Structures are given as C-alpha cells and as structure tokens.
View (spheres, protein in one colour):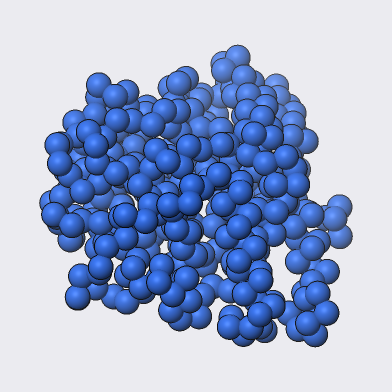
Length: 361
Ligand code: PLP
C-alpha cells in the first residue's frame, strides 16, 4: 500500500510522516498492551495522562519553551484562538494587527468584535507578496498586544525577523510553520497554531503562552475560551481533543528523532530552494512573491494562463501528485511542502514542472 500513496501537497490537513502513520497503525487496536485504542481511552486514565504529558514535554524540548510559559492543548484549531486571544488579552481593550494575508485579516476582524483594533500594516496593495519591514509598521504605544501571522499559508510569505512592538507582547499565529525551524519563544507573549499542517491532525490548537499574560477571565466569556481556566485545569476542563493530542505527540517525537528543529530547518531550506530556484530561472512560470518574504512552507505560482494552470493540476494528478491547485482566493498553483514532505517529493514535482514547461511553452 505504501506504493499507492500519492505526493500530497495539501496546505492542511496535510501529509504526515510515513513513520508516524505506521506507529499509529501499529498502536491502533491495542496501545502498548492497554487492550484498547487511544481513541477509546478515558482522558482521565493514567495511560492517557502519560500520552498527554509526553506530548507537552516533547514540544517543550523541541521548541525550548522556557519554564515561565504554559502549553495549552485546546479544541477549535487556530480560529478558536482568533477570538480567545482577544477575549483574554485585551485587558485595556486595544490591540494592533499586522495584516499580511487572509488569516491575519480574519484574526483582526474577529478581534475587532471585542475591542479597538488598529491595522498596523495591510499588505493588500501589494497583493500580500511582501512582509513589512520594521519601518513600514505603524504600531501604537501601549496596546495590549501586537498580532502577526508568521507564515501566510495562502499567499506563501513568511516572516524572517521578529518585529519590535514598542513593549507590547507579540502574539504569533504559527499554524503553518511551527516546528519547521528553531524559534526564540522568549520573544513572543503567545504562540498558537492549529495542528493539522506541521504538527499532526485537525481538531487541536496549541497555545504557548507566557504565564503573566494569563489573567483572571472576564465574567461573560465562554468557558472554553478562558485561558486561566484551561491553564488551571491543564487543558482538561472538558474532554480534550484526545486523539489529535496523541498524534501531535507522535509527530513531535518524529521531529526529535530526525534531529530536531535545526535539522527540520536545514531540510526545509533545501526543499524550498530546489523549487524556488527552478521557478526563478524559468520564464514560463511566474512566482511573484518578493525574494526576502518567501515562505519555505507554501510556494504559490502560476503558469502563463488559467487554462494551463488547470491543465497542470489535471496532469499532476495523473502523475501521482495531489492538492496542487492554488487556494480559491488566488488561483494558480500552490505547493505546500511542510516537514513531512520529502526532498524526493519536491524533486518529483520539479521534474514534472520541467516536463510540463517543455511541452507547453
Ligand atoms: N492561520 C493560518 C496561518 C492557517 O494557515 C490556518 C489554516 O487553516 C488557520 C489559521 C485556520 O486554522 P484552523 O482551520 O485550525 O482554525
């Protein structure tokens, strides 16, 4: 059956390491002699508690999360945090949002329901092909936090520096590049991510939050959005997304076994370079993302016409690849090449692209 697996370039949920899937398969019916699947376990059992603790511990080791941060494993993916962040962190009711793509725009829109949101930068006029420099940011003094999206899944841009926020805590959506390179967690107040791209499967949002930012919750907010309650109950106020947490643990362990985040960064650089160098030298494909702003995770490009884009997608499927169709907002083609995409997978894609170019130019 391994031979039948396709090269899956989906933006999320996305391809998983084969080793992780095999472990999950081996443990599917009888997890370590417990006589049951992880899916069937009580989240209050000691066997599950061990899985839960180990997932957190592995993430802490990998990301070198300092002791004054809490890791919350929550329902609702990243989008749930668009609201929860604002509900918890807007202590004086003011936050600045840097909009570099679709999801950061959605995060800002959600937060604006709950307070005074100022857009510190909007990449609309350059069609989100650019990550702003420090000088381009209009950050207010004394806001509760500044929000950015570290990697823009749809447009394919990624931050390569941590901006100065005039003393306000920096909140980062790392949904599509967490665990892809080392991060200095201490520079952030909150890091959050949906798990289904680089960290496992859908249903789980990971929140890494500096303890002093966890304040007593306001009275009228939904209980599952209360960071203080979730921290006090170690994310088990209610039944957690138990299987997704188990899968995140397997993925994190895989990353560690491969050599950790330095090794992931090296592999991801190499994969992205192969694809991006090819795009840059080609006068057939158009890759509009600005050089210093390019994502190593999502590469969005086009052929000379919409007809050829469609033909490309169709032929790529016949060649054993899937999910290369660009996001409906931008069209064209997008290759998502997260940690679990192999170098061979990217090489296979580039060879296909060369052949397609020769046949269609
Ligand atoms: N933020 C980013 C950067 C994303 O790529 C996504 C993708 O789905 C989201 C947020 C939304 O995440 P979720 O679907 O887990 O709510």
